[in-house]
Amino acid sequence: MKIAAVTDDGVTLHSHFGQATKYEVVTIENGQVVAREQRAKPSHQHGAQHLNPGSGGDTHASGMAHVILDCQVLLARGMGQPAYDTLSSAGIQPILTEKQTIDEAVQAYVRGELTHRAERIHHK
Image (tube, rainbow, N blue to C red; front, side):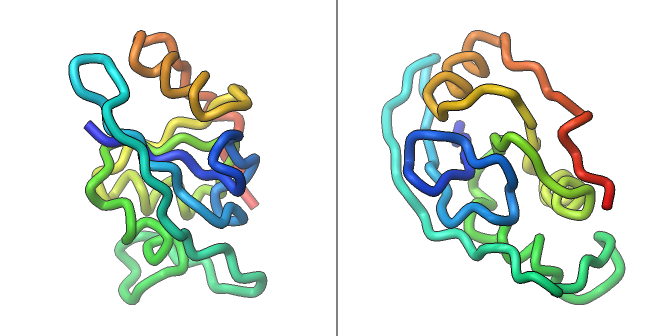
């Protein structure tokens, strides 16, 4: 399984999905991290139009998701509703957490202890 985490530094989870500049993609096999890689992530463009999934056309959220379509989970500390819906529609489970570091969040996920915090979805 692959878990993508939004980050700027490869260590900490970014507080907002759209503003992060990178994905840290962690591959898990048999409960262990077996590989890590960084991928460039398109960032949120201020003034970019937020469209709902299924409304036709490519939204900036779906463009940000395109480079992690091989991942099953995305970890972040916050994101907007359009991004959350787009990721979910693409088959990627967004999990919003209060955890600060990628390693802490990944290990909690592997142990089955990572709780999704729906209140971290931005509705504006």
